[in-house]
Figure (cartoon, rainbow, N blue to C red):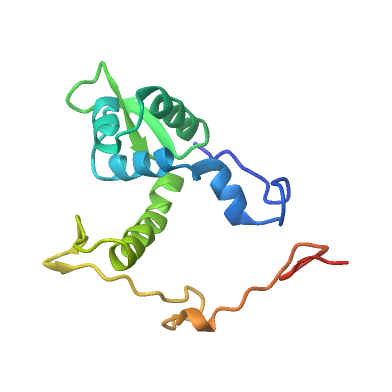
Length: 158
C-alpha cells in the first residue's frame, strides 16, 4: 500500500511539506484516530468512544485515512468476519509526531499528564539525534534552507 501523495507545490501559500501533511492528517479526528489505532483499538466503536468524534465525521476521516494510505482495513484476529483499522508503515511513521504532540501538551497544557509513555521499566524520553552524523541535536542548531524556486524564508521572492 502506498500513501496518497500530496504535492507540496500544489498546496496554497508557501510550498511546504507541513502544509501537504496537514492536507492528509490535519484535523483533530484524524490524529486522534491514529492515536487510538496505535493504542490497539481497531474497532470503529472503540475509536469513536475514545476520540469523542461524531460518528459521521469519524467514518469520513477513517475512510480518508485508508484512501491516503495511513490506515488499512483488515480482518480482526478474534473476529475474522469483521474488519478493523490498522496502521500502515506511513501511519506508524506518524507516531513520532503524535509523541511530540503528547510531550508538548504535557509540558505546556496539562497540570497532571493523563498518560505517560514507558520504555521497559522507565518513562520514555525522546532524544533528538541526527540520522546523518549521529550527533545529539539542539533545536537551535537547525537552520531552515528554502529549496522551492521563487521563495525565501520571508515569503515569495520579488
